[in-house]
Image (cartoon, rainbow, N blue to C red; front, top):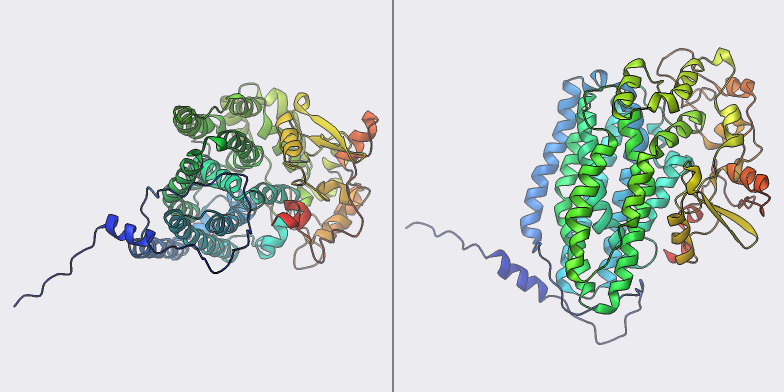
Length: 543
């Protein structure tokens, strides 16, 4: 007698049963933990029909392949074959993306609480499991890099380094938009914009550059992560369609989508571009960052997704998207890259001077690049030896552009800079769009937000010591302007260079005759001891 095979229940029927498991409590009035401005209809659909029984075995197999890839990379001696310049920039990159995964998981808990629909909650639950998995995978990757990379210094301080560095803390500021404020607005920032548009650059295009530089662990990890984004994109679209059922939500959707795009652009476009173009030694890539942006952001997302929302009754003006591209054309990431390299002692990774090969690639992809920026890179290459007792940072900060109050990135496009006075203090913005975000979200961007204000007037070596960006010997800097094992800069070398940190915001306000640009309150931040993150990511009461 042959055994009968168990009947397989259809996905549709199973999903319908899941949607019946939710209920609204009648024995008490639940507290509203995450209030929203949106009108929430009762009916909604999960187009992916997420079922945990189908999900778990598939993801287990994928994760085992990722972790097995780590072992294979060691056996193949990948750490010693990959570009050392590239391995350095992974120190901030992995930390920032890992924080994004943590924020995404938190966003799902907000949505589960705010949206009373069992189908959507089920999809958010599956995505939350995704984000927890991604966090573990990326933390494991960071540990793998720290254990096997030629220079592990910088990996050992992990999240501490991220919150203390002014570039990566700007990333934390951007990613805080996943978890601070209206939960639907957070969902748009995460699911509809970051995961639908910008992960194509950061998790697809960037791993391609990694592979070109001999690093196969990053593509192994991040392409596996990206394969889950289809679910997250679906969740975002389902959330969008749900709130779109009520016409009263349309103006909010139009506003929030624009603001979500801009805050992603302000940091992620600059950061991703600098990682791919200024830390790659392999120059066979035929696409510039602008080419990748046109392909993944403009064509694949804006034209194929956002514009079609007009058919659903939404009117999202093209101004923001055109302005973002215009800023990239004007050299946004090239100018911010110079700011980052000039301030190398203030970071927790090493920098490598550009070579003639790099110059040729940049000139080929961005005609006129050398005439505009070549002088800086030649000067940087000449000042890598501590015996010179000279740093580009010496005169750089005196005339540096102010840091943006909203996105916390340098306002390097002069004609775009905006300022306004709030509570008798001047806030500077990199663009009118960032100014709009601050004006239209009162109470969102508050506190001690200007990194350089905290160290205005400090001697450079004392700042580096206070940040903790020092190697195990207690005197050699983690960051270096080169990749050599010798001629490394120490705190004593920095002190001999006699550099005083200046706040561009304080200087600019004084030069223009404006009220003070200093927003630092002494005693609020003690980065060397117990950093307070609330002021970096916004008003803590909004969390």
